[in-house]
Image 1 (cartoon, rainbow, N blue to C red):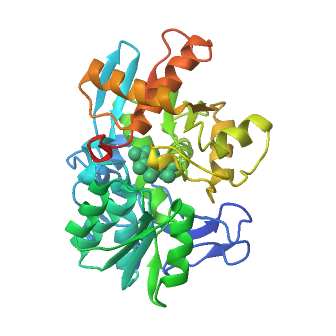
Image 2: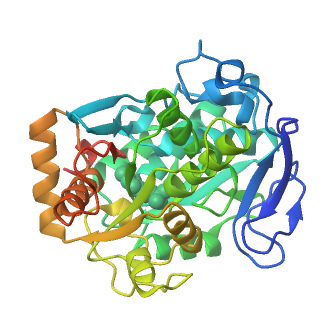
Length: 374
Ligand SMILES: Cc1ncc(COP(=O)(O)O)c(C=O)c1O
């Protein structure tokens, strides 16, 4: 079955080479970097394009690469904004199936992979992506193999097994899990690693569309996002570009803040040094497991997204992250994960330094549930 007729081509984000969107593709054949899904965007006002009777990310099906009729869905997305104060909100992604924003990307990636005939799906993960892939694989009836660092909290491991996935634990970080999978996967396995296939970003971009709707067509001033592989940042950046091309918004953008931890901050380091690409972060350590990504293949895209939106990047020390995780949870009742705590710490630092001005509208992303880390 082909992908949606709205898909024009797959285009390399780096060299511009194009590929057939109706083949199972991972990276650019020429330069080995991530592919982007280019769409024929609909003409019309948001109210003509958005399926307002669908309370999931599939309400944006007209700007997604898979039709609603072919969606592998557990009803993901359409997450609420929770008040922190009069100008600060938490976008609570813990409400998604399997408890994280990874559900959006995996719903889309599994839908596309199944439509294009994949027989088995494989991915390395820090935990949340593996849980989501296992659940969506189960929903689609497609076998799943995941590899995770051996110190991944047990709740993630148990959850993947609960959904019937083949779980492999590997010493080291997600980079080592990726190497293990590359060496051990079968010839017909399809790799849905972060930024190594083009459709997960298409699911993540729905967060950008939701913010547009939740702010009634006006956008927040600042979006603070915890960054590992970068699909969230890149997805929202792509969504806003599409919205501008459809005439929904002008050229102003929320300023994107990329948050990492002091123990693994390749994007922050590259941003601060003015580099266009990230360098591998040796000895990566943090218990915000989703942020322990020492060599993000899409790092150069995160840097572009941050700079084009006049954003910034900031690394939070481990203890401060833990303190702020508890503080935000106790203040709001939201199930904050360590990545969400790092975001809250970053927002407070940026307010104290004057980078965020009093009264600016700030969205903090709580990307997952905190329950599985304990
Ligand atoms: C809770 C959480 N937040 C943030 C991230 C980082 O996401 P990305 O790799 O898309 O930057 C992850 C990734 O595993 C995660 O699990």
